[in-house]
Image 1 (cartoon, helix red, strand yellow):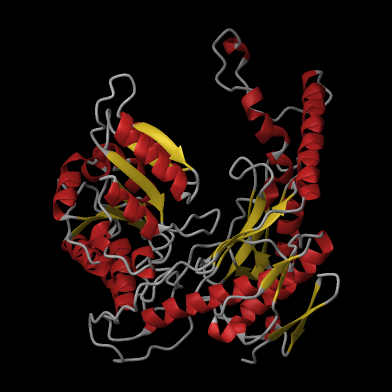
Image 2: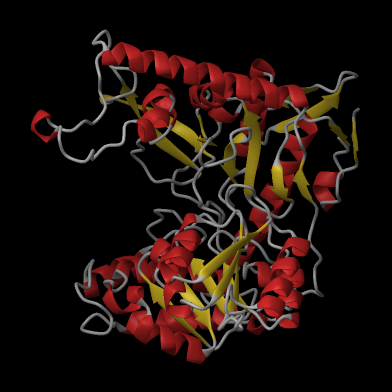
Length: 563
């Protein structure tokens, strides 16, 4: 397959022109079964972990602010849409416009309202106008390319109906398929098929009753070995791994220090615990240390008794920002103030580090410095569920006191086997280097894609090592226009806006995968450049060096700010 090349030439006014040379991507042969490289046999020994390089320091993170006029236009856009929303509510109230919202029945008009009308104002008048940009149904494997089912709406996005047609070969830039294990290659999935025939699809019991299988214990041992800790516990749902285990670890009289950008599952778990919650600024060590110092010096409110426990809760990679936790600094602070550390590696495990072992390996830290290690299997491993890992005493305690461990159904056998085969592949226990090659390919794709976007003039957030790449769109009208324009070009993207992000920071979130070929990325970049010009999305005032050699050695790009 001929490779496409992307040449970028700067022009005096800061705009970039992109030419795509060589054979067009759409003429290339593209399989839909995930990763395409052939196995390389017996290059590393079974179970051997490649020697870890000396401690790595964090690569630069980018959080460039947009020009002032962008913020003004964003607020103005929301203001106009809100005014139209109130006007449409008036038309519905007088019967000039059909009302589609959920309402109480006439015989329940004297009841306490079940549906809060004003609280649904945003959904009713803003989200419904652009609802077609979300929840698009797909009808194929969610690999590097997929097929999207075409749909139409006769009532302005209140309801949808399928046309029976599909949009084929859409490049998937939204799934968390970091290492390409969301695949349907029959050779790779042979063990999953065998386990399904042996155990079936479901266990129909909790692990403490009749649902504890040998492959569950095998996976827990493998996870502990992979992470370099004493023990681990697997659970069937990633969200519940956080929300149901945090209440088992802390409670009344304890203090949780939570990063302001933590995932909803962490926030819910903290609230359910009954512990006092204080929030520190994102990745801000001064803010965290100030809260730690205050907690140690003053203790609990009113009584001033010492806190029973102080737990710091952070994520490895933040899924909306693409930023990486400042783990060495946080470990130093938690040791200084004798606090506990809960690390959520949902997006970082498998995706960063020389051998895919997450942010602890990325920074060269000892996993034993992390008190509670959490991660999910829904992303890098192409499966479902999550894990808690750490000291044996911790895991044994959670097996008895965690609601998710005691009451939830055991993990499905074929899902368990999928995780086992993926993790063995990453560790080289299958006798190949496929897993290591995928980890390295993901890193190359990440650095290449990020640097090209910066050269084009887009504002992107996050760490250079993060496969989560947010492109800032800001204005509400441009969010939906961007999503629709990219789908027309057969690029599947995820767009995110308020209230999931700050009102002035709507964005498109790209997730890189080891299964993306360079031709795919070049095609996406080519289309992004054209859409960015058409919609005026290139807000960056920085000029990045277009030297091609930087994409070979991953050197940091030279940049300067245009006043």
